[in-house]
Length: 267
Length: 266
Image (cartoon, rainbow over all chains, first blue to last red):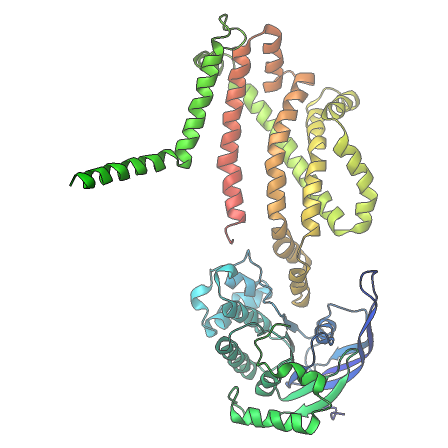
């Protein structure tokens, strides 16, 4: 078990998450005995096979799904109210009838909006020339940058990301990962990053939790102690990856099964 | 040389042909064809009483415009159309959203909805006049009641098709309920509301005339009734023409720009 820090950002303790069937689909236990803590400010990657309940876990953490036996608790030493949570979904989920600027501003409270926080973030992400454009005019990579700006704009205590960079070209994906790390270092926050790509997890994370086939639980907890900044697909990362697979090949068979491709597959 | 001239002539002819086949040309052709058919048809009626010629109708229109208060009756009818339209849209959209979003409300209201959907317009008009008297309010309520069920059908369908994933964004980012409704939810319904509005204007304007014919002493419907009794077909057609022009102005001056505004992000 990971040592519980006093300033734990997040405590996940889910005894069971079941989906009741509805005639067409049989009942299904997505998560069982899933327990872990994420210390404040840690970048934690969740790796597991498709359909292993990763998205379900994020939905619970985001407060979108409350029908669960167990809890996901978010601790904060400063905030009295429930700390802010951001969620970057698998698709950018921008509002097509709003400009890029409005898409970010809409989630901000009036002082932050007046402060121009959204615009500053967008400019930082090289979207300064697209503030008044509609999302339909943007490329896939640009839309994800807007979604990323929106996620960071509310200064979240917890940032949830659900395979946000799938189905992108490798260079575009790498650039987005670089931007994500850049923002995260400028604006530290606890991160839960779901992926099925081991290389991506090693490049981004402080730590990787390997989840089993459903009902999912943690099968391995690996610290990624590589120095930052890291280079995607570098020998360092590949060596780390080989080491992991050598030591835990059997255990990770399920999780690593889909990591032979390098992140461009769709779930 | 000769070949070149033939080519130039051919391409000029081709350009002309293409322009003649363009949408604007086709519209004009269609309109002229209508006038032509109409003019020829008048030959079958030497008296000019049953089917007056286009120019006679135009002349009558001019006369009623200047001498007989056509604009007054037109504006009274337009006011009723507008009142019934906005009433029906507001109530229909609210009910449609309620029934689309809440299953229990849908089950409870569905029977009533089907009842009103299938109630003949004339029955609603008669009942409203009998119960509320031959008043302005009764007239407008009768028209609105005829339209509301249609608005509900469209808006309910739109509400059911709303993208829940976008509403989840609002929930996660804790957008307040008012903003969620106005900026995340309602824009998804705009296409459906526009469709309901389009159909609504056309239907309401027809029913308003019947309401006026049965129980009002002004408006286009009232005048048409009068012309019918006087067998003044030229005046009937003149009023029809004037109202068609007004509705075209509404369509191109209000509805089309509104729709462009709602869909400019596409």
